[in-house]
Every structure is written in structure tokens, then in C-alpha cells.
Length: 340
Ligand code: RAM
Image 1: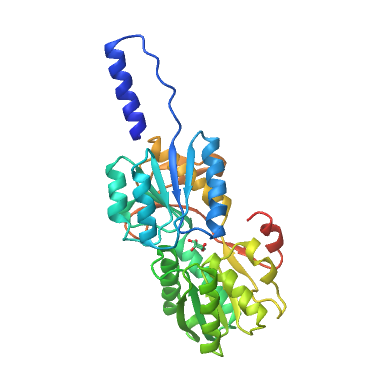
Image 2: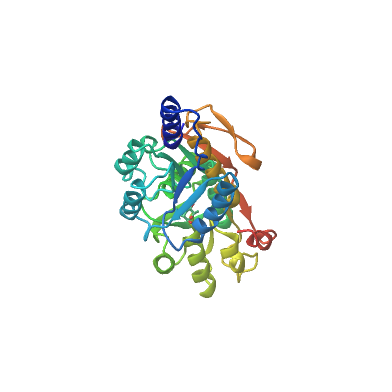
């Protein structure tokens, strides 16, 4: 039961005991604050659109907040402001796994429930994490794409977002684990992990540096929509032999995806973006309404998306996994570019 429901019931009980009959005020819908990693990343605008649509259809209201930059400090500033308001749930994509803990605990002490989506805060800072796709599944898809693009051997590099991002760091760690645990990948050499901080210009500069520093580089893997779009443009404009894969929005990758040498990206991955927004919204509402608490084994119905189960996450907390990563290639990229 959320804060508002408790106080509505208490008020109702007081009014009833003092003077009957009493008219109950119509209960307001759930109030949710959706906190992105940063402003200017289309990924969060796309996720917010389906989040708001699903939430409003359920009678909830949503305030979407975009911090100025992809740092924990910028998110703490935003959270400070949100805590003083009357939100039932804060749903956040974390710029840092641990640095938000004190602030989110403060929110929880105020009776605000915390859900994270896309990029998790640590287990103590949340009720549950809405994970877009299994971490190992994403890493396996990316590792196999790198292997394929490199023809099984040679130098490759990662162009990530920020060095503190929980989601990118989890995918990178899982990729490294896969690479080290299977002989198949023994001839692939990961030369560098560069960080473009989910800023287009910095990601372009980092791509240029990788190409300059490693003339034999065969593939860049960018597990960030901002990074992959910037690298795709740089590599294609400069007719680089080095190819690209990673996680991208089809609408931002359309002109760079193709089989011919003139294209920088043969194929890439993401997940159902509309599903991510909607599932996150349904989760927040179910938590606020007391249908779930975020404990392992609980199940709930997320509107049209169907039934989901809360499972144990590898960080000691719990998560809800939306589905499998999706591949975007020359055959389907145009169709998906219309959607997100
Ligand atoms: C960027 C953000 C986001 C991540 C995607 C793949 O948009 O870093 O957190 O999930 O890339």
C-alpha cells in the first residue's frame, strides 16, 4: 500500500469516527517521477514516450526528468528536488550503481518507492530492477557479432558510455567473461575500452582516437545508442575498414546499416523499446498499489505485455526481465526505424 493510500485510509477512518456519513475524496492516481540518465539521448525520450502512454492509460501521472549530464551528481540534484514533492514512485536509470544509495534511501524513508530501469542502482537502493534483456544474453549477442565481424581473429575495441554506468559495465564484464571462458574467442584481442560519456562529440573523438591508435582495428563494439550512432557516422564518413556493432536505435542507425563496404555497421542489437517503457510503468504502478513488493517469485500482469515474474538478479537484488535482445540488420532496420 502506498503512502497516499495509507493516509487516505487513516483520514477516512478519522472522518468516519468523528462524523458520519463521510464522503471519500476520489483517490488520485499513482504519481511517478521517471529519471533518465541525461538529456539529449533519444533512447530515454523513446522509453519515456511508451512509459507515459502506459502509465496514463492506467490513471497514473508521470513527470519525466532529464539530468543535465550523465553523472551521479546530476541525478542527486534532480532527486533532491523530487524527494520534496509528493511522488509515490521514482523510476530511475542509474548513472552510478552505488553513488545514489544515500539519496534513494532518503526517498524511501519519505515513503517513496524506488524502481530502477535500464541501468540498475544497487540492491539496497531499489525495490526491483526492470531489465530490458538478460545481461548474459546481451553480452553473448555482442560477443558473437564481434567474432563474426572480425572473422574470428584480430583487434577490436569497446566504445562505452560513462565509466560508471551500471548497465554498460555489466555488459562489458559479461562479454569479457564469455571471451575468457571460451577458446573460440582466443584469437580476438580487446585492445581498449574507451568512454564517450553518452555525448555525441566525445564519442566521435574517441572513435577517431581508436582508429588512429590501432590501425589494424577490425571492429568497434559500442553498447550505447549515443556511442554507436557517433561511431557509425565517423567510420562511414571516413570510409574506414573497421566495422561496427553494438546497441543502437534503428532510427539513428538506418543510414549506416548495410552489407556493402560503404556501410559502417553490418548489424546491431537493442530490445523492444516500447516494451521497456510500458513494463517499467506497469511495474511502478503494481509496486505503488501494493500488488507486488519486488520480492523474488512474485508475479503480476503488465497490461498487454502479459504476466511477468520477479527473479533474483546477479547483484543480490531482484529484477524483471523484459525479453531477449533484438537484432537489427539490413533486412529489418528500415521497418524498425519507423517504430523507434
Ligand atoms: C544509451 C544509454 C542507455 C543504454 C543504451 C543502450 O542510450 O546509455 O542506458 O541502455 O545506450
